[in-house]
Image (tube, rainbow, N blue to C red; front, top):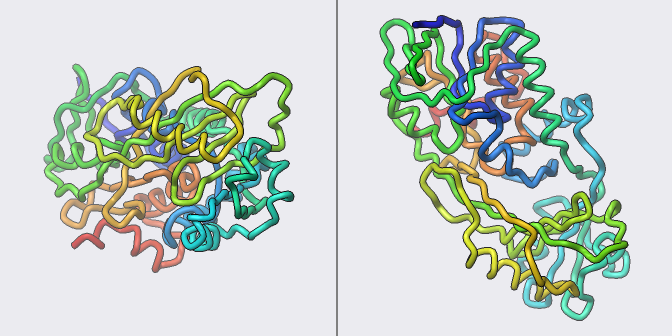
Length: 358
């Protein structure tokens, strides 16, 4: 049995879903997701923060181009960002704080935004207040609803096992064959594998594991005004959520594409670094998880048609910026697919193109 569409998207994370919603009014679209439900991998395991100056210059251009859509979608809630440093972090602290647009503030001014910090250890603090927590589940559901309303066909549990191009793309997933004029590779950690199946040169997109531990907090703490906290030198970061504290060891361990899980030793080492800088003693974890953040070699996203296969479009390499960049990334991908002039500056479009890898 074969189903035919204008565009077939492989990958049901926030990137693929956002593009499906963007394309829905303009083309017949099918989205294939290998897992039983959408947003299962990286999109379901995000730290869920919008920080406009997070990432390199090209990523930041996508962040800022996405912010209005995030506000309109009702997914942003104000949450300041706070960076903590020790005496030995002096050099890197200033560089990292400046890179993130943070301003130095006195310790006494910062402490109410994270009362757990240890003033005997923390010697420098920096903040900004124009950052936001993201309701990533709402964002996924908004995109899913818009896609379905526009007629997009979404297939879950549809792992792609074969691809060939014979005038049209023929995609085998399970016991079904799908055909499409254009194929979009939004498969996250699996994007290079999908490219190889399609006969397209892989780009060296590498998944890296990032873990998270959920810690209980003492009863009676009001964490509603707490900041998102980052320790200089990427020692750890933390975010209060639903009366718990999410703490990540900030690791970036290269991994093959897989359903990632947290490594006990990595968590233990990260939580030890966390305990060095706070007054909270970690006595137990409520649970933990890990996700894969997939980066292109230059840590910018890859959005554009494969030079040797113009009916194959990359939407990949989101790294840790997938939710932040999704609206602008989807608009650019849709512009390229539909033959529209991109809204983004030409230099940004060029810097995102897979042609940059030669």
